[in-house]
Image (cartoon, rainbow over all chains, first blue to last red; front, side, top):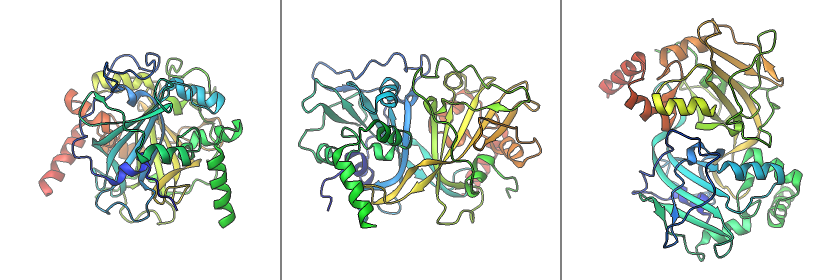
Length: 209
Length: 209
C-alpha cells in the first residue's frame, strides 16, 4: 500500500486557484548557458527560474495520480517536466543528477475540442500550477520542493511534507521520478544508478504478473 | 466540414510499426548553439536532427485527431512537439518563423499503471513515430514534411499529400499549429501574426456558441 502522497503527482488532483500567472520564458538569450543553478532571496526563498520553458523537456503525463480514484473527470490536466540543461547533460553522461539540478513541474489544463482537434486533449494557454524540485547541498536533506503561486519567489515546503518521503521511497534515481522520463530511464539502467527501492519495486511488480 | 487530414494529428491514428528506433539526443554540447538548420543528403533527403530532445518543447497532446471517431481506445498516444532554439527565439520576438525553422513531432505510447502511477497516462520509453516539418525557402512551397522510420534520413513527403493542404488551411501561423502551443499563441496574438484563415475559423466558432 502506498500511503505517501507524491507532490509531483498529488498536485494534479488539487485545484490551483491562484497559480496562474507565473512568468513565462522571455525572448533573448537561451538561458541554457546562463542558468547557473537555483538562486535564493535573503530570506531563503527560491527565485523563480524564469526561462524554464527553454530548458530540456523530460516528459508530460496526463491525470497522473497515485490514487486510482483521484481526479474528477472534469478536472483533467497535463504535467510537463523540465530540467536545466547542464543537469540534463550531466545525467546523460553519468545517470546521476549534479548539485544544483533544478526540475520544474508545470501544470496545464487538458482541453478538448480546441480548433480542429476533435478528439483527445491539448494543453491550455493558462498555467494551473508550477512547482520546483531543487538538488542543493546547502539545503537540509539535499533536496527541496517549492510551490510557486503568483509570486517571483517561493518558500521551501517543509521537510515533513509527504512529497519528500514519497520521492525518497519511490523515485527511480536520487528522489526523482526517472521512471516517467522516457529518455532518461534507459540511461539510468545502463549506468547502474537506479535506486535499490525502485529496483525492488519493479522486481516485485514483475513477479506479480 | 474538415476534409483535409492533418499530418501532425492524423499520424496519431495510424500504427507506426517500424518507427521505433530513431536516434535520441546524445550527450555533449547542447545542440542549441550548434544547430544551423536542416541538412540534406546529396539526393535531397532530410538528415535526422539528432539532438531534437534538447530543443525547445512547445507542447504535448494526447490522442489528438481531426476525426471525432478516430483512434481505438487501446491505441493511445502522446505527441510531443519541439522546435530548434533559434527559431523559438525568433518567434518570441516577432511572432513569425524564420527560414530554416525545424519542428519535430515525436509520438510515444500513453501507458497506464506504470510504477506508482495508478491513474492517467505516462509516456512510453519507446518511440512510436517521428516526423519533421521544415521551413526552407529552397524547398518548393517553402515548407516540407518528412517522416522518419528507422533511418538516419527521410525523403520529403510529396506536396500533394493532405498534410500540406490542411496545415496551410488551418495552421494559426504560417502553416503551423500555433493554436496548440501554449506559450506561442499569445505571442502571435500580440504580434498580429495569426493567419486570416485561423482568425476566421476562431470567429466562426465563437459565433456558433
